[in-house]
Figure (cartoon, rainbow, N blue to C red):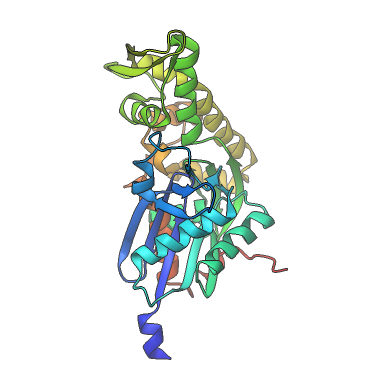
Length: 341
């Protein structure tokens, strides 16, 4: 028994709308790829996943369909998601070793049905034992906060599909706010801005690149100007225009405002004793959205609280999930207790 235990693959998974990250016990992060799948329309046979599938976006013929099986932090296509998970786990495991124990993180606002879907996906992908943990809890553990102590910590995890805001104390989430506004909505806001203001159609990958390069939540000291190529909606001919970071900030205003509103709403619902802790300790930002220029500054202005960006915010959640996997007995109290039917 000990022999098999030694060779089994225990993995922690951050199953994100935008990216899937896998932590293997004793090895740290072994996979970080986009949650994208290319498959044959008629047979549903998976052709490519992750980076390989991403490279095919916008360049496929009609027999191949490319989707993201997760939408807004929930599984949108169960069968394809299961295939993607199995393929990712196989990619990081020896072929004769299915994952034995899996800790996977889910949004804090997840329904019982969505929890069951994640659990079933992992079990069908070969896991023998599945544990779920809320994303903000995993993020807090990943950035090194002591979630067991009777002190309030506020964490804002801005992913691809959801923004998770939570106040954590004594191994539990005291108050939380989960909104389905995050990185994807910012990207979509940029696509719609170019359609509306410049009659140009740009692709999702171009919009994502613009968001990362020049997107901001507050005016920049030196505004940046970039060239954007797209298709003219009137003539149908490719076209290039110049835009500034101020234009992109306007495009991002709505999703950024909603995230700020959600943070303020949760602060209103936080018990006063924990509010005092948050006043001293501030707010911790994790997830890819934390990298948006000036978002910490914007939150600082709106809340008058200290705001910190986690070191390597993109991997904070999987690092926390990995830490839970490595010390399951110490962290059993932070796992989600799921109703089994």
